[in-house]
Amino acid sequence: MATLHRPDLAIIGSGSGNSLITPFWDDKKVVLADKGIDTTGAFGGTCLNVGCIPTKMYVRPSALARAPEEAAKVGVTLSRPSADWPVIRDRIFARIDAISEGGREYREELDNVELISEKVTLTGHHSFRSDSGTDVKARQLVIAAGSRPVLPEVPGIDLPQVHTSESIMRLEDLPKKVLIVGGGYIACEFAGIFSGLGSEVVQINRSIGLMTQLDDEIAAAYSAEAEKNWSVLYQRTLVAVEETGDDGAPVAAHLVTSDGRTETYEVDVVLVAIGRRPNSDLVGAEEAGIDLHPDGRIVVDEYQRVYAQGEPVEGLYALGDICSAAMLKHVANHEARVVAHNLENPDDLRKARVAAVPSAIFSYPEIAQVGLTEAQAAERIGAENLTTKTQKYGDTAYGWAMEDTYGIFKVIADRRTGKLLGAHAMGYQSSNLIQPVVHAMSFGQDAYTVARGQYWIHPALMEVVENALLGLEVPVPEDAPL
Ligand SMILES: Cc1cc2nc3c(=O)[nH]c(=O)nc-3n(C[C@H](O)[C@H](O)[C@H](O)COP(=O)(O)OP(=O)(O)OC[C@H]3O[C@@H](n4cnc5c(N)ncnc54)[C@H](O)[C@@H]3O)c2cc1C
Ligand SMILES: NC(=O)c1ccc[n+]([C@@H]2O[C@H](COP(=O)([O-])OP(=O)(O)OC[C@H]3O[C@@H](n4cnc5c(N)ncnc54)[C@H](O)[C@@H]3O)[C@@H](O)[C@H]2O)c1
Image (tube, rainbow, N blue to C red; front, side):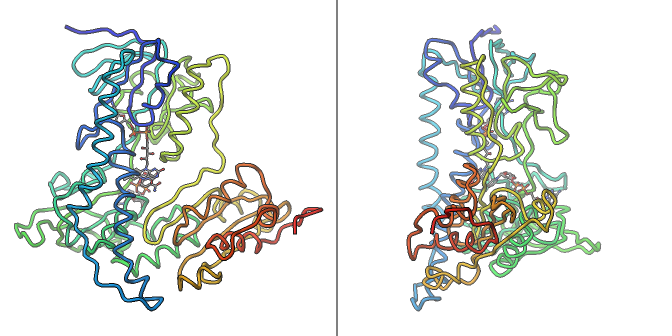
């Protein structure tokens, strides 16, 4: 028989949505619905199970396996590394699966929380129905249903050797040869992982260059490095995949070049990473009268309130990949803190912060960015008002120690005021090095004050950032620190 729940709060999505269940709800009723990750049924969303965390847990062993290359630059010979994929995989998922399962059990045990482990579809602005017919009508509702990989509609895309990021990390064995489709975050991270661990990687992209959404200088520098580290082919499109019947290379990936030639690569597995789409269709957002952007994202305002017919709906919020321009976990987490506050304080709504959102691509080399690219900054304030500095790691003391040949850190500022507009870096630990610029941009500190208003540990790698900032042509404030 169909059940009806009338909770104070209902949440769709157990990723960042799970963190909304604060102690405030201890004496109230909450329903949390999650169908589970498609490939494993796991609780807890993308980041934990098939996203940020397992990928970075693969990046670490892959980086270690590259140690002989780095060591050789400074006169140390390390023996040929050998990566034990099953050991690496099981270390990762023994930890992750236990956290996911523990999270599910904890929610199931709570008296105030009802967990619905099924797909649900909105039936109104504050109500939904599960596939098996459980109805939920809540006082307040949050849609935190995330995104999923996009797949091209080509013959053979359903073959077991064709993977997305949601399945590739659980392979039985390290593939000898991988074809990776795409030139964005996921494709570049997995190209780095597999090539480091010893697979032969062929990465194909439709456009010329990888990570073309980045600052042009970084995209060009990264593409040049990637081309040295694995095979990168541009202006190719995947048109079909078929089984070969040969255990040595079980699938053939058929490609077409921009000038109409066909090419075939026989590989163990194909990884498709051509973008992710918001799951607004899976929750039936449009049918429920919710406003959508052309790319399928739910429209929200700065308070994360969901819009319907151009107006915010009281007590209806969205967060994370289903509504955000930046599909990033730290963004989803921030939005979850804002939504948690707004659910608990409907008369004192707080806004989500949209400025100075950083991101990193944990590839080889690693990339990090925050703020405007040089082209965007020129468009915004005029090229004549910009000052930029690209500091090579290799021109600093720690860069000499590393014998670094490719690391760069670029900063962009308004030459009239010293206001920092962006930073773009490629190289060892760039995801950490960029944080002082994120800090400065978040707190409105000018470039000169950041560079000279604090000590920088000598001769740490962070001197790359200090030197980049000092290389900008910006006004020196009166009484500037020395
Ligand atoms: C391979 C990979 C690597 C990544 N690496 C990074 C990184 O290093 N750093 C970073 O910042 N970001 C990274 N991301 C992005 C990050 O994982 C996401 O931005 C973040 O997890 C989104 O969180 P969310 O809460 O919006 O959605 P999710 O965590 O995806 O949660 C949504 C949940 O809703 C459920 N759901 C969907 N539809 C329904 C329905 N109709 N009924 C019931 N349940 C439903 C899903 O099963 C899912 O569990 C990565 C992503 C991928 C794929
Ligand atoms: N380190 C991180 O923060 C991290 C890591 C992984 C994923 N993510 C998030 O997940 C999102 C999705 O990642 P992604 O790599 O799938 O997407 P992406 O948007 O970064 O890159 C998609 C790539 O696929 C190409 N492409 C698009 N359509 C295509 C088609 N039909 N055929 C061939 N190529 C096509 C694009 O040109 C682009 O190179 C990212 O935008 C990012 O927000 C973040």
